[in-house]
Structures are given as structure tokens and as C-alpha cells.
Amino acid sequence: MDIPKLGLGTMGIDDPATIETAIEMGYRHLDTAQIYDNEAAVGDGIDRAGVDRDDLVVATKLWIDQLDRVRESTEESLDRLGLDRVDVLYVHRPKGEYDPEATLAALDELREDGIADAVAVSNFEVGDLDRFRDVLGRAPAANQIEYHPLFQPADRLADARDHDYPLVAYSPLAGGEARDVDAVVEVADRHGVTPEQASLAWLLEKGIHPIPKASSREHLEANRAALDIDLDADDVEAIDGIERENELYPE
Ligand SMILES: NC(=O)c1ccc[n+]([C@@H]2O[C@H](COP(=O)([O-])OP(=O)(O)OC[C@H]3O[C@@H](n4cnc5c(N)ncnc54)[C@H](OP(=O)(O)O)[C@@H]3O)[C@@H](O)[C@H]2O)c1
Image 1 (cartoon, rainbow, N blue to C red):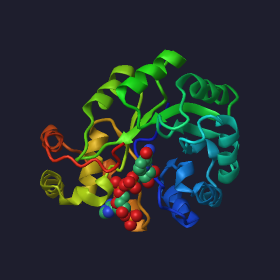
Image 2: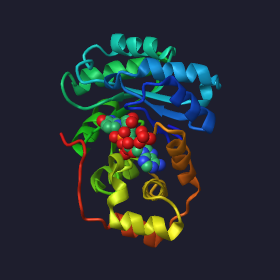
Image 3: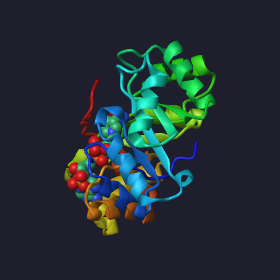
Image 4: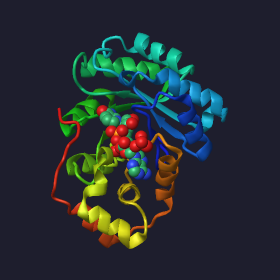
């Protein structure tokens, strides 16, 4: 699965103009979900931007009460998005109506039918990932989890590396809290960048795919600029070593 290094998280973005601006700026990976209630706005923004559909990676997620009606629910998402396929279709959480055999078989059928290019998971623990591999005989196309300087789940990063699939980091700026963490501020100051950019550069250096949410042009641009920051091993180690922990989305 070819997921761009940096994407746009869209939770809380309801204005199609923001999506359009992001695409014009070069964002090619757009992350939405049924539960964000903004698939229509994301679809409008994609339509307005008018770029080649094949150049975009559009991801949505089936909410936990939809996992026993995968085909119908995905078709409803596609209607809202105004698209005939998504690139990445996630199980949002392994909860609610999630039944590994039935849900994953239904998702895989959509992949075979070309409705979803790839079947992926979100908020999966290592046990859930093992079960996925048992059922479908392969790794998921991605695992999207909370990952930022204040929450670094090493077991999930190791699983992604061992089984060779991308780890997508949600809330990569710790929802805005990264700017208050000393080690992040020190790395940022060394490179003349903001703490938010340092957080993204740290994730990129580790081969993780962050999807920061940003609604202003200034933030959208600043986050894209993180692609050009080169951190050295000491910088990565300094942020890796942060001991303060703050999980924003605990179970
Ligand atoms: N799979 C899941 O269960 C799950 C759960 C949570 C989130 N997500 C995904 O992850 C995405 C991002 O997570 P998130 O929205 O929780 O948090 P986040 O990306 O860590 O932080 C977003 C916050 O940081 C601000 N910000 C963005 N760029 C900035 C910059 N360069 N400088 C200063 N502030 C900046 C934003 O402000 P402005 O909006 O004002 O620009 C917003 O307040 C979501 O949109 C969603 O797509 C997935």
C-alpha cells in the first residue's frame, strides 16, 4: 500500500474549502471516517480541487455499529463522498459489531470488487492484528493508531515493522499538546522550527505516516514543510526518551 508520507486528518473539518486548499498545497492523503460526519464535505473539497482521482489516497472508516453491514454502509459512505471507490477502508475500532471472521470477509469482498483498494484497521492491539492475519492470511494494509511524543506504543510499531505494513499516526501533534513538551521544544529550537513541526519530523524520521489535522492555511503549510526537516539520531532519541505519557483516546 502506497500511503503518502504525510496526510491530512479531517476530524472537525466541515468546510470543503479547507480540503480544496490542502489538495492544492500538495496533500494527497485525506483521512475521514463515518463518525466525523464530514464525508460529504471531504468529497466536495475533492471535487472542487479537480485533481486526478488516481493521484489521491482517500481513506474512510466504518464505525463500530456498521461492522455487520459492511457493504451497505460502505456504499453509503461512497455516496456521501461522491466517489465510486475508496483507497483505504478501515475498521475504525475492533469493538461493537466487529466479528473478525464475518467483518473481515465482508471487507475483503469489497476489495475484490474494486470498491476499496485496501483493507486496513485502526486502534488494533497486537492480539487483534494476529487475529486479522489468521483470518485473511496477510497483514492489514495499515494500522492507524494514536502516536505522538506523549504516546508511543512500541509494540504496535514493532508489529508494523515486523510484518511490513505502514503505521499511520493519528493525533500526531498530541491534539496540540506537543508544544508544551520540553524535549520537543528543544529539538524544535535546534532546527529553528516549531514544536509541531518537530513532532511531525520525528514521526517521519521513524517511517511513521502522520495525519495531522489543520484548518488554517498557515497550519496546513507548516505541517507540509515538516517533510523537509532532517532530524539526526540524537533528536530522535531525545523525543523517543520522553517519559511523560498522555493517551488522548484511551479505550
Ligand atoms: N482512528 C482514530 O480512532 C482517530 C482518532 C482521532 C483522530 N484521528 C485522525 O487523526 C487526525 C488528527 O488528530 P487530531 O485532530 O486528534 O489531532 P492533531 O492532528 O494531533 O492536532 C490537531 C490540532 O493541532 C492544531 N495544529 C495543526 N497544525 C498545527 C501547527 N502547525 N501549529 C500549531 N497547531 C497546529 C490544529 O489546529 P487548527 O485546526 O486550528 O489548524 C488542531 O487544534 C484527525 O483529524 C483524524 O483524521 C483518528
